[in-house]
Image (cartoon, helix red, strand yellow):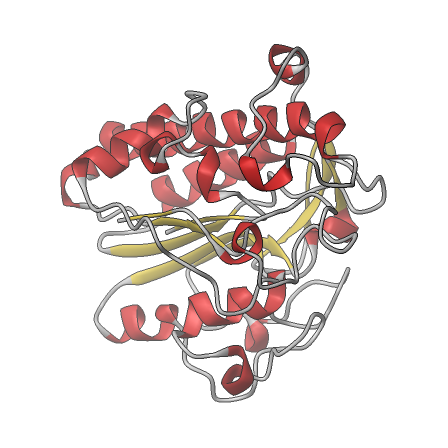
Length: 279
């Protein structure tokens, strides 16, 4: 299962985007099911992640706002898969331990026991081109490349390490804005493709905010995430398990670029709650 962060549904070609940013996600949709009206019940990172992992509302999981740990006793997808003979692994952005920039202890990993490279709040641990996560022993795992590429590298390691059958959750941070910069950062050379006359979604037109300047980097980050997803599906094929693997893709929430009311999300506007979803 692949979960991106702050990813607008209308950047995905299968959902009608005219920009051709997501050929790999589009291919998954062509081979499976596309959910055009998927919504998150809680458009903020941690709360939405708790919903995705448990299938329960954030008012039930204990994570009704940011920075709260998953309630004791909550059962996640990892628990159910493990009980049915699957190895379980996690890579990336967790948001469910309340440990911030400290390693997530085993007791707070939601049952992901066989592979772990992640951080509770990677926004605090990483920059777009460098940073640090933690392995299953709580030891630092550093990287010095575009963050989505590094997370994809870790996910490929997980695919190659876990024994069949396995359930792997990959939590990308992109295309989320870089918190300490309050803007989006695409890989080098990607934003330039969209500087001149970028496609502007209807809900942003004539709205306040810095969205026009942010869209090129946002689109570049979306494009790179799609390339990373292609690397993951290629790895499944290379390791001989693609045809027997179910791939799910979604995002924790959308984005309206501080146009309502000065926030990127956290509202009930469609651009905030409407998410891409493919199975």
